[in-house]
Image (cartoon, helix red, strand yellow):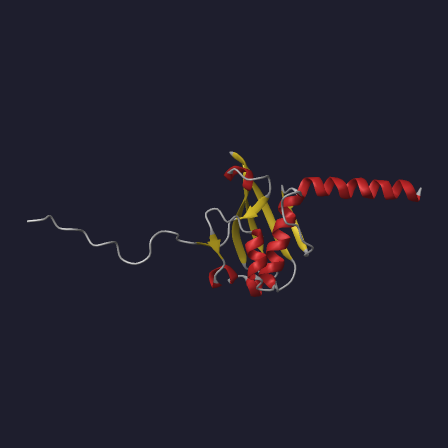
Length: 153
């Protein structure tokens, strides 16, 4: 009986690993509503854990990063809310695109955050979910444009 229970648990753990492969997953209390895969729920758990601790490296780990982004103080807006207690994430799959979803996070203090996520396969990468967070890094030229040349006399 014990061996059967152990095998069932191992099978479940292996299936969870297959479903979340390529997506960061973390242990963080979260109430999940709507239609979410284990990978999507795990990603939001990582996001909340990093947000609550103001861990910018953790936030970069869950960020889509295409185009390249950096984490700024604007991305930490809900940090205190994430520390307030049990949050509820309501997932809404995109009916026209299975590689994207919206998630409304309702924090314990009543504050709501509307966020989104995408599967990186959309951008030509391996399958793995990431949050659409961060401030886009402008890789274009900085400063004023070059001076225009005037025609020769």
